[in-house]
Structure formats: structure tokens, C-alpha cells
Picture (spheres, rainbow over the protein chains, first blue to last red):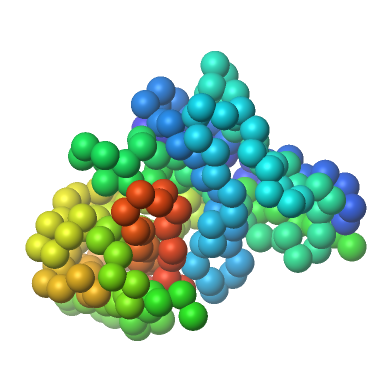
Length: 116
Length: 112
């Protein structure tokens, strides 16, 4: 049972335009969400996160939106650059404490290609 | 760089042999995790540790065991490697109170 789903395996965008990556989750206990970026032959690197008490978080060109009622989050990259081409994973966690130990559940990933 | 290293980076092994992957950190973080990455599945948790000698299973733990005898090292052992365990394995660390992981560079394991 995939609790975090990224239904688009790939996305192709022109440089300068907006990239929108989507993620859905099913577990209503998740209350912290993160996006990771991964280049080939490297480990994933943390990009941006959002707590369930917020519906938006911005960091430069990256904005994450959370719609709790729809159990949906999205990552917007504006403007997109060729260096953004990578695999993007969304992840979710029950807030650390108790027995969760900060475990992250990841989606399948979306390959973003930004064309010059 | 990030204070987390995985070894080896690449390994080819035969079916039925035991294999041990090592994760070493210099950050003194309490939490350590082993994930595997496979196409169509993203990253799936194998085992994790919340302290020395404190470990527990993740969602895909069958055929794997772990050990953590000191803070800095977290070992993943494939007891008898199978072709289905061909994958890229990532170790991650997390400090208490912070939810983002720092990942290692990964180990590409091929079981033939």
C-alpha cells in the first residue's frame, strides 16, 4: 500500500517556465512533508519542507503548497532552470516523538527535465 | 563533505553469498536509516536505528539485518543475497528535533 504517491513519473518544462510537481498521500497521521532532489550517482538532498499547520512555504524559487483536506501537496519551481533537472521525491512523516523516530515515507519520484 | 560515507560504492556479488554494507557518520547523530531505491518504488525503508544497539524494522526488512554497536557505524547485512536485492542502497542520518535527513552517496549492489 503506497501511502505517498507521485503519479507523474516524468515532467518536461522549458527553461524560465514554471514546474509543478505533485504528490498525494493517504495516511491522515502524516503532519510533516518534505521534498528531496536527487542527481544521478548522488544521494538525495533536502530541498524544502512544510508542517501541517501551514499551507504554503517558500524558499527562493521553490514553493511548497499543502492542501490537507485533499491530502495533496505540490512543489512549484519558478523560474525553472536546466540545473533543476533531477529526480524529485516527496516524503511524509508523523512528527517525531513516540515511536515514529522520524521515519520518512517516500513517493516514487518524478523525473524533471528542464530544456534550455 | 556531509559527514556521512557509505562503503563500498559499488559491489557485484553472487546469489547466496552474505554481503555487508557500511554507513559511517561523523555527525554524532542519534538516528540512522537504511533505504533502498528501485524504479517505480522510490525509496523504501529497510531498517532504522534510534540509538546504539537500538534498531527496528522498516517496510522491506525481509532478508536484511542490521547492527549498530557504536554511534558512528550502522551496518546492513544481506544474509544470503538474492537477485531481488539488486538495488541502490542509501544510508541517512538525522539529528534529534530536525526532520530532514542527510543521505550518503549510495551503494550500487548487483546480485548475479
